[in-house]
Structure formats: C-alpha cells, structure tokens
Image (cartoon, rainbow, N blue to C red; front, side, top):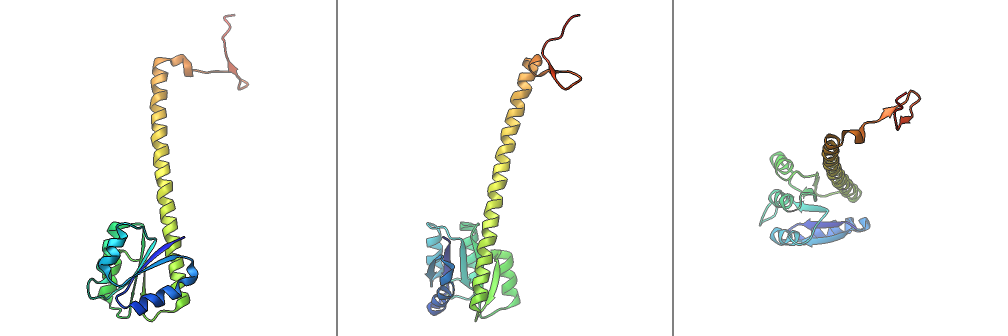
Length: 176
C-alpha cells in the first residue's frame, strides 16, 4: 500500500484531493500546515507528496525542497490555482517536482498523474536496488579474483590444465 501526503492550507481542497484519490487504495494523510507535514515526514516515509504552491507559512516549493532532503525517494507534485512561469521553474529546479497540476483539476487526470508518479518511483527504487546489487556482486568478484591470483602465484600447478586435442583434460603426462 502506498502512503500519500497532501499539504494544503485550505482543508476543503485537501479533502477534495483525498476524495479524488480514494480509489487509489493508498493511505492518505492530510496536513494544513507545512511545518506539521515536515515533522511527520521525519518519522514516517511517504511515497508521494502533493503540496499547494501558495500557502501562508511556507510555499510549496520550499516544502517540497525540504521533503526532497528528508525523503529523496518520495515523488513530489505541486498543485496551484496561480500558475506563474517563475514559480513553475523554481518548483522544477529546486524541488524536482514530478508534475505541476493546476486548480481546478480533473479527477481522472489527477488519478492518472498520481499513478504515473508512483510507478515512476517504483522504477527508480528498483533501479537503485539493482545498481546496489551489481556493485555488491562486482566487489565479490574482485575479492574472488584477488584470492584466485594469490592461489595461482602460490600453487601454479593448481590452475594449469593440459588439454588434449579432443578437448579432454590430460591428468598425467606419459614419459614415453
């Protein structure tokens, strides 16, 4: 199950967003104060954070930038009725948002956007897991290669193989 955080100083907007995402089968937490949301993020991981752009205590760009520091794997979406180019550029550059959604939103489009954000997150997390696995395997191979080189230098006959013309291994050479 996914965990989604919604932060908007207008509680009716937060509740409307939760209703729109009700079918997503996610656990959704609502916050009307950005500082409360950040405190919660210090103890609970979220897969997605949706924030209003303009709020009195802290704007959405700053909130999502702080969320990025706390939870870099959480996807970030900003929502606003006041779309200005400078704000959008700031959101993309500072908070690395996944999408910008304008108010009023279309419920199916919002649901699809959330689905894509969560899928994108899953791919990023899996890619990181696989990269970590490859790094660990490379370290193990390097360790094994070093051990083999030590054995070869100490016991050169251990790895020397005499091959026959037919591909067989010749165990003993006859002195005839």
